[in-house]
Length: 279
Image (cartoon, rainbow, N blue to C red; front, side, top):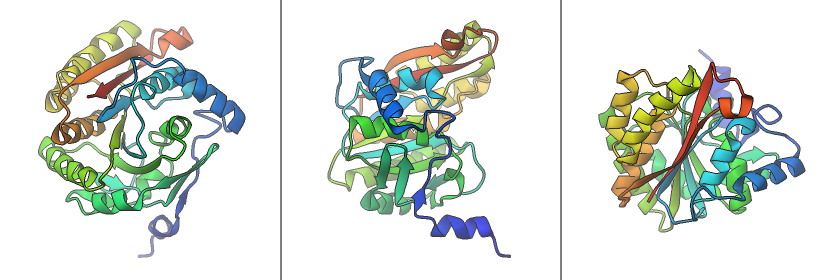
């Protein structure tokens, strides 16, 4: 049976913005000024890092946390974005096949060498299907463009997956990164707990962030499952942590933790936002 969306996914080479004008302004000059403002004060002195975790909500809520975290790490020419899967289609780990990601600030090129190496990793499926309407990678791109104008990317959508699959895929991701012969920053895109009150969100998030700070990816996933912590990018973050450890990282530094209530003033039902870097 002919599947028009599958056909489109193989033919489309440019990924056009899906949430510009909603999650962030679509006006280029305003967007650049806003991102530059968010990045002006790093959460910690800038350092070389293997990976970083940043939130992916609308900029008014999480843009400052995202910008300060990315300003705290050196942005190399290549970045691999690992994000939660909010959209249908593809496999457990779906590697985008777009040649460019368009934002209001211009195009971000996909890196063919990194994409080819990742496509050969067992468990990773080349597919554009879950990327068309997905915001979790898109909202990170303008920050990377401002901080590193010549940046190239690869993007993987990560579903809920068994720990052993994530560990095996992470070893493959690490090998693909090493094969590039240059630094690659792994960027995990995740928000924290959703829709509890402010104090409960901070309490639940801390359980996951404590395991994150201990560089315990499996423990973080176990805590999220046991305490019903709706950290939407937990598996993307776990994949990032496993891959960074395979690359030689030795520690994780949690940078910031807050909730949407601090912006909206509505503390009864919030979303948690946190950032961390892997050194």
